[in-house]
Every structure is written in structure tokens, then in C-alpha cells.
Image (cartoon, rainbow, N blue to C red):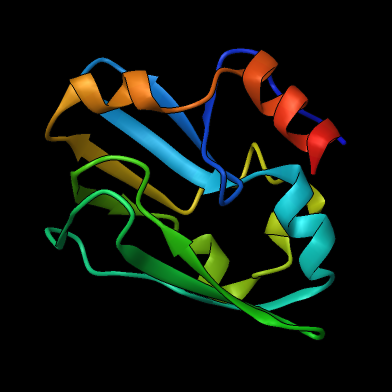
Length: 126
């Protein structure tokens, strides 16, 4: 299972790549692998606002459907429209193919997320 070092992770297997006051959010390798072949991604609208742990997207695969949860409070500033035409991009490279880009509302919430090392331990114990 691939875990990238410079990202934050959640127990729901989302990753967060912080760039200043903004962040990209996507599905961790573990999540896309568990879901199998992804066939549909529901995306929010730009300017939608979500609180931490609120579902902002849904992903459907041939095996299951799963909600994707916001790791921190944020406002959607961009969506990855490529996923509308090709949801399987999440299977091909889950770290390259983000779902949304947000403006972070409360950067102190980042302290509650897992580092790559924490996430690797979390996966080992699961």
C-alpha cells in the first residue's frame, strides 16, 4: 500500500495536501484498493462549504459505494472535472488524481490529522 510522506491522512482514508491556505483532498491508496474499480464520483459545487467530517463527495465502484469526508473545515475552490469523465483515474493514481481543492477555514485542525508515519501504523493495526 502506497503512503506518500508529505500528506496528512484521516481514519476514513482521505489524504490532504496542504499548499498555504489551500489543500487538495483525495482518496488514499488503501481506499481505492478496497473499493475496487471506481465507476462514478459525485462532486460538490465550487463555493460549497463543508465542516470537518461532513461528507462532501461519494465514490461508487463495482463492489460498493462510499462517502468521502472533509478532513478539515473548508470551502470548495476547485473540483477535479476529469473524474466526471474518467472516475477510474482514482484507481490509476489516487495521489495524483485529487477530488477537490479547498480553502482551509481553520488550519489548527491539521494538528488532528495523521502524518504519513501515523497513517502507516494505523494501517498495520487495522
